[in-house]
Length: 474
Image 1 (cartoon, rainbow, N blue to C red):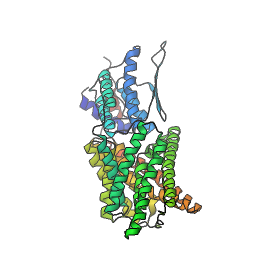
Image 2 (cartoon, rainbow, N blue to C red):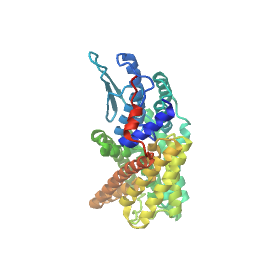
Image 3 (cartoon, one colour):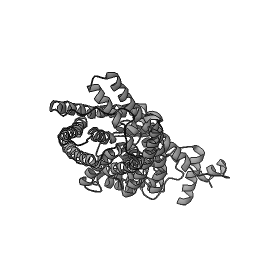
Image 4 (cartoon, rainbow, N blue to C red):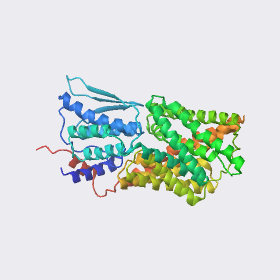
């Protein structure tokens, strides 16, 4: 069967079966004709195929992809090479694949533990492209395994200095989005660059990530407090909490909240609970660092001014939209994304900031605004990702970055330190609700995008499609 005919039949079966895609085009589709049927009695050949499938799953799971979508991709790669009767189990940090090889033969079971590495969206994009090639029957298992090993062992596409600039640019853009001036944005830029360099060094020394978050929260707060104390003497008008909130958002941006909520929604509650607990713990590290810095600043006589109550004075809508796009693209840059992913992330960030800002101006509140904006980002991410040929996860996660509820976290912490326990708990609950709303909105938006992308097939009876799928017996 010709590749183009096979692709059209695959699209038709996707419409008829209603299966979803974990990436832009391939995952979840039934395989019509394997590249070369695998002899299940050949343990070496079976192991080679399953090694390819598990390495694909390892990159996806490590990048924050949901457990259900990762499982679909692993199953899809195995089925493409002729192993369609495969049991796949994906948990928080492990992938288990088992194949029944036939009567009288022991099953082949493989387990791979996924260890966390530095985020690299270029690696994710390259694996996504490789899966497309596998699905089109253009690469053998041994070739795919060699390509995967090359992708997984390659260095980052550009230097760490560029990634540092991405984090710093993101913090500066968020400061402007929050209504800060250029001077404050410059302070946020330098502070975040220092945080990133320090935390990279601490990570190389083996310090657990929780304590890196504590250090990050401390360094994001103390300079802003000291600058505020200095500004009093010179008569400057400085609102240091805008820098602090920008730093909190940057530290929370890399957490896998989207994947945690997606797992809970799509039927992987155990993995979702583990990821969600991890997000809560690491966010607690940020809160602890900020709280420690506020106490130290208070002892040094640099007491911060009270935070303004709602409504918060964000930047005007044009600046809000542009800085939202810059912050999203900067996050993708910090994650070593390719140029086309940066462009798609910028557009998604602009859309999310515009929708959220418009709804906040209309008085609908942060929860409604975040939900609708995240749904828009998820939808735009799914559609833009197809045009840009990048995984939707990159665009979606980057697009909602400017919407992370760092303001509610800081407001709740400030009120807690002032003894306003009820108000503090209310703001912390708001932050948690907004975070879940962002992740749920992205999931809904991606589902809508997959539904829209399905090709319309008319006049093709299911029996005829099935007949073309099945091999003829002479």
